[in-house]
Length: 202
Image (cartoon, rainbow, N blue to C red; front, side):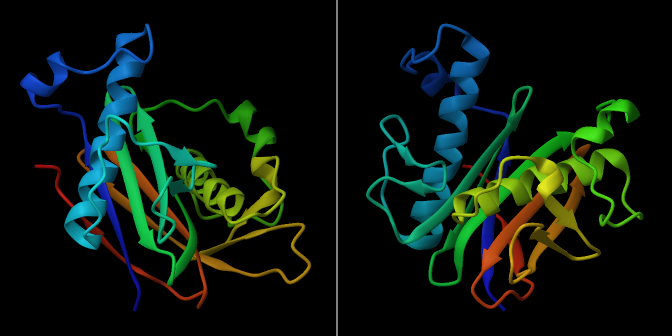
């Protein structure tokens, strides 16, 4: 079974936080931007042996680290918490991650913007949203011409792009921990389930 690695964090070491470059005027956005890249660089180094400076890291089309085409990556953030996801491109040609707090309120009226009649009826609205966000990123990073969340169909353990003539189905995983919903999606070459391992940010 192929393995995918993710990291969830909301903390910067105080000494690093004080020396962050100012890329955005909004301090929270600036914090999230660099913290998510720090998590991404940490996974790349500890699990794949790739040294990358998170302060200067650039992403290509949101799905690759520039200069590291061997990796498929994805980022997410909510409030002060960020997430990074990394997979080997030999196993995953694209990945997606989304995180949401379980306390987030979601208006039922908003479902018309992302619910598809073919979706699984067993998932709660917020969970379905989270899965679709992760799947959207994976499909988009995988080259699918996807524009709307409604074009993602979520089944019991799989998702697919509704306009894909081959109806290729890909796996996702859902994790609930520390008050968060974490959705991981992967367009894998085998189309089979994957193992997800959390990497703590030191």
